[in-house]
Length: 123
Image (tube, rainbow, N blue to C red; front, top):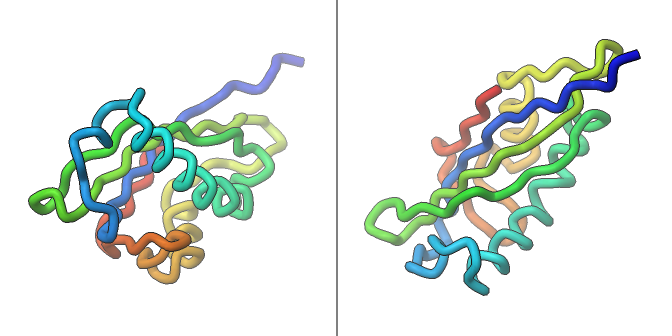
């Protein structure tokens, strides 16, 4: 049988208690790597518990962006999953709803506070 295709989706959200600084924009900076590690530590278990959990591979943070005069930080991530005929089907509406429920209405991600209007999931 053919091996399952790997598919990507993007995940975007805004953290309201992480002030944006120039070094967050640089993927090789200590600050980027540190923030990336902590955010991945919070995001990964949520996606593993979601409807695509069994097929979920992981997320890579691609960028941090300045939002609202640098008071907030936007997070862009590319996430991957295996698309198997027998496996869970990716549904961005379902995944959005599950993440919303698991982040207290898109307000909490670990010790981070989120902008409740900021979560986007694109398949």
